Amino acid sequence: MISVNHLVKRYGGLVALSDVSFSFTNDQVTAIMGENGAGKTTLLKICSGIIPFDSGFVGIDGFSIVKDGVNARKQLGYLPEMPYLYERLTGREFLFYIASLRGMTDVERRVNELSGLLGIDHFMDHELGTYSKGMKQKISLIAAIMHSPSNLLLDEPVWGLDPLTSRTLQDFIKKRKGTTVIATHAPGLVEQVADVVYIIKRGVIVLSGEVSTIQSDFGSIEDAYFHAEEK
Image 1 (cartoon, rainbow, N blue to C red):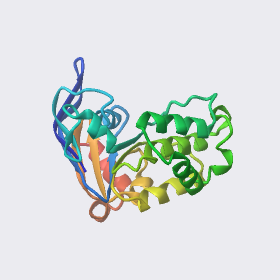
Image 2: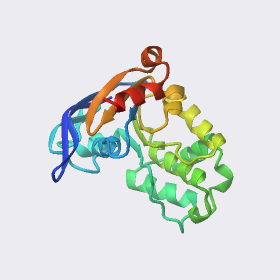
Image 3: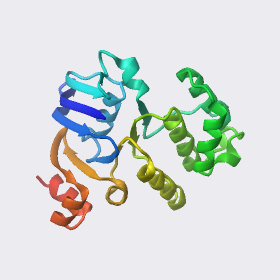
């Protein structure tokens, strides 16, 4: 579970997040929508402990991301929108390197299990520089989940992916246990995988609720998004 209370983040005179509160609960997929610059990526980076914030509270399974950041981050997996990969390493070498940083054991079994699940097992010994965007996304996802985090943060997880890879990731998101938070521009993805959606504009929540309820009220997530953006 991830708790965000009265969060404020400024970049100089720009307010990226303005007194926002979220509760991302267990076994629920929550989508965060908003235009570029609305604060989606900033929120995920704060929750993952990558960037600081000005005021408020962020808790990960009861651990403060500020006061107990080490334990908080152990409960997290984070997939950034543009993951950085060491392209001269093979997929297997990269994942073993990430596992060593986390002090993981039984790494080979876990890597084989997840690479098979995502259909990338035949490419694990190829250099990452030869991978397509979809393959890199899969490797980055494995890196984010191989320590079995209870909380998963995904920033635009299917952007630029081919339909088959996108469907594979969507199926994984729907089946996994724990808390999943997705930042996305894609209304279709929200309708396919999310239970709850928050729409933010200039760092403020302008619409939120269960996806099924919002679909009933507005006809579709896309229509609800445009309605919220017009406020």
